[in-house]
Amino acid sequence: MNRNIIPLLAMATFPLLSAAAYASSDEAWKQMAADVEAKCKKAAVAIDNPNAAVDPFGTSHYGLALLTGKPKGAKGLIVQICVYDKQKKTVEIGSELDAKKLGLMPAK
Image (cartoon, rainbow, N blue to C red; front, side):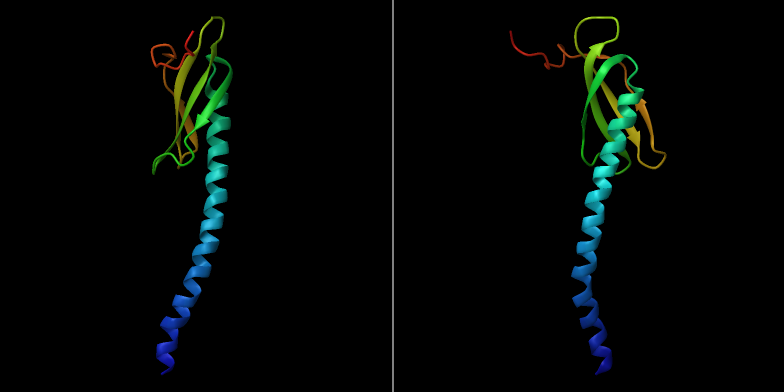
């Protein structure tokens, strides 16, 4: 009879453990997104005062962000893709994309 109580205790404890894991995961996602934003903005050397739109979860291996802003020393609006390696915590920036060609410019 005592052996029957172990599965019951495990089932009763599981929801408590999963709630704690969810809470810590939510905070971890926010911290990862903040790290993606900070590192991507720092790496965007071709953009004056870049704005970052961070995918809140990314992929299983990478954080993702779109960086937009005025190109340094030029007019217009450019976009760059930033990829954050979740394991290494490093970023890589793609080449400049023309915001007009992407359909991101406001209608006149």
